Image (cartoon, rainbow, N blue to C red; front, side, top):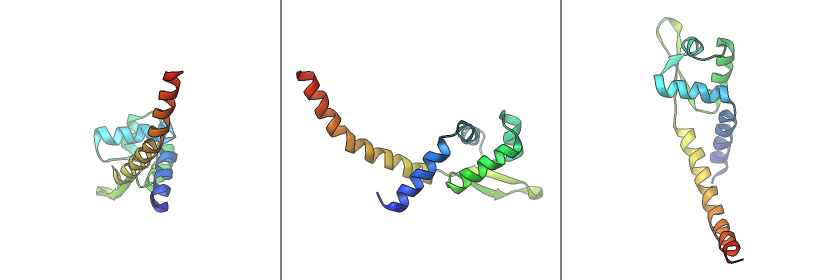
Length: 110
């Protein structure tokens, strides 16, 4: 995997490590584009905390900010970084499958 793709995957994993950020992503996935204020109304997180989480999610490329009416910013999911992270995990899984299968065969024979 190219170094830039590894960096993208790392940012995604850092972003997904926090349960509040996962909740924000899940809310955006179920409700579609929305504002930080609307997210704060739906989640047990303050609007200020949501704004900080959205900034990190935006840096990771997982959400994009879109200007809305009356200067309200709406956040939308962006799946491209998640796909890079999935490819990273798939490559790691391929690297592990062979040795793990060999180990299983050895242990099964023992």
